[in-house]
Length: 67
Image (cartoon, rainbow, N blue to C red):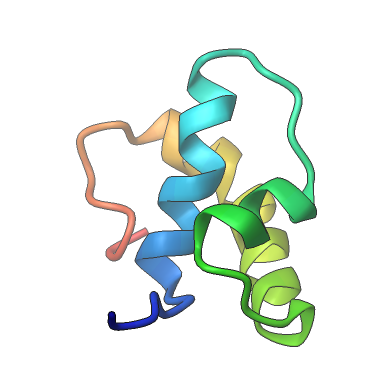
């Protein structure tokens, strides 16, 4: 079985799901969902997601990759 890879899109999706459902989440939840990768990879991506969230909300029709 192939391991999941913690990429920008997988981490952003793992952050989006509980956030859209107004559920509390933390980096352990994201780590579990993306397949257990190290926090060295996941933490900067979560930080970027949090910093980009207001921008993504202001421009909802623009793909996250372009924001």
